[in-house]
Length: 330
Image (tube, rainbow, N blue to C red; front, top):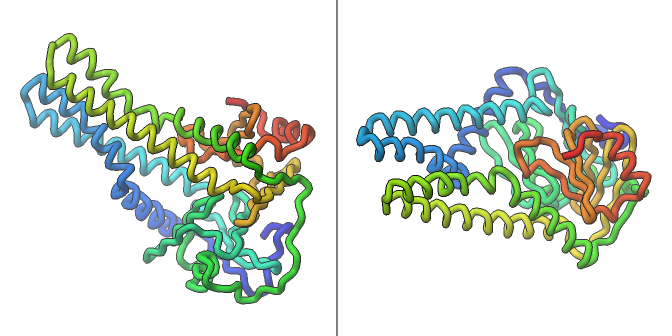
């Protein structure tokens, strides 16, 4: 447990993940991914090559087999990403702990750092037989069910109290910024740019870009119509992603809230009304400093893993330390 967040005696739960438990968590997450609405979009797009081959050759069996092969490859890629993600915190041999602080926050500590959540900070908590998914405005993560009790869920959802809350004052971080409408607008625009320029958002425009010239050369209304359908899907996905990113960012940085931070050689600490996050610099692979925001990327393949922070929160010395700690730019 981090020295910066001592647990209330008797409130800590610790679990060391073995291979079987890690596989069980990964399998459950894969099933959730395949069944999600967002994944249905990708599955439809992955079936497109088989449809094109079937139409060109007239051999529907070959098209069906090709579609199944492409979809299977996509699902295998999801499995790889999930397993790789779990290796950072829930991999075999790694230890995860949950506890309460004496100032009344619920903490999760693993090899990546510590997340502390205040009462009522969870937007949603979902429990299955083997895992608990927690979504807050600052983070989302999965935990084994052994580490999360019904009382913990009630505390995170806001209708339960910490069982041993002592009322001690929480730590005060040296950097602070009050979110004004101008600050919110700038960081929201930066977050929207991150999401809408990601591969996930732009990939749906690839099928119409391929189908349109085929339809023109072949003088086929079918391909032109299909290109139009996929273009509409891409535009709708772009607008929905942009809107969702702006809504999420406004919820994370409401006007009037004070954000606090600390930048050290070892880690970044962020504190807001939802709780406190301690993250080691080794978790970030790249950074970008723009005029309005500080962007810290955990995974180059997923825009959702990019942390977007107001630049005004940091002093020049703090920005220099961030650049030293995360030397790679993107």
